[in-house]
Amino acid sequence: MTASTREPARVLVTGGAGFIGSAYTRMLAADGIAVTVLDKLTYAGNPANLEGVPHTFVHGDICDPVLLSQVVPGHDVVVNFAAESHVDRSIEGAAEFVRTNVMGVQTLMQACLDAGVPRVVQVSTDEVYGSIDSGSWNEAAPLSPRSPYAASKAGGDMIARSYAITHGLPVSITRCGNNYGPRQFPEKVIPFFVTNLLQGRRVPLYGDGGNVRDWVHVDDHCAGIRLVAEKGEPGEVYHIAGTAEVSNLELTERILEACGVGWEMVEHVEDRKGHDRRYSLDDGRLRWMGYRAGVDFRKGLDETVRWYVDNPEWWKPLRESH
Image (tube, rainbow, N blue to C red):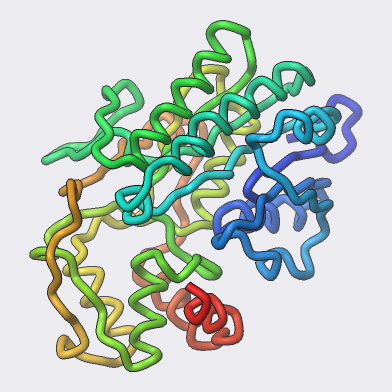
């Protein structure tokens, strides 16, 4: 990810104060790459995620074309993490998801086209494919989203790809499984369960707990994105898979074990509307390019639980305010 002058590239990370975006920013900054973070600072955007990380911060929205016309030019790479991302929230109200995940992507792609950005990455999700009973999706699998969140991400991906095909914008798309790791907003299942248990609260398990997800550590996800930013082809999709496919029942068991509590802390609740049964990605294309997920799930989960144990000052204010 180096400009032609051999100086460190200037990278714009949209949504860079969120969980995954801030991890990506830390990764680049650690290598001396100049990073601009653009973030709206919604409930999931947290400036504390970037404390001590060298970067230039811009408070703003990817749906603002005037702001983007000022911020985007001069960057060698733009990586779009900005998104509304929680399925339950999208079920309660889809409008903001469509605004950010579809219209925001279009506005950003146009700004990148106008500025002549050399490399763009649209960060997406395996949820755009719907549910798969067996096997794994490859990048040619048809999109069949089943939640408003997934549908909005699929729409944004199609917008991004259309800019590659129609306008020649050098944008690649990444799709990843469920992320976990430190600094994840505590509405997501792992930090939600862990912080509940640390406060002596029971955790809700949807349905029969048989829904299966592919778990990838946030650092592995960011390494895959970085590889695509360096070597990805315009208009192409790249999968980033993790190291474990586990059911929600198995995940709950591992979290209980890591927190030192038993099944009496689990409450079975009615299943989520339209709950996809299983996700699974074939990441052969990215592996051929050199990608390897390096964080073992059990070890990564234990380290993640320990982070929440050691950092209550980070998550307690978030739990109290939401």
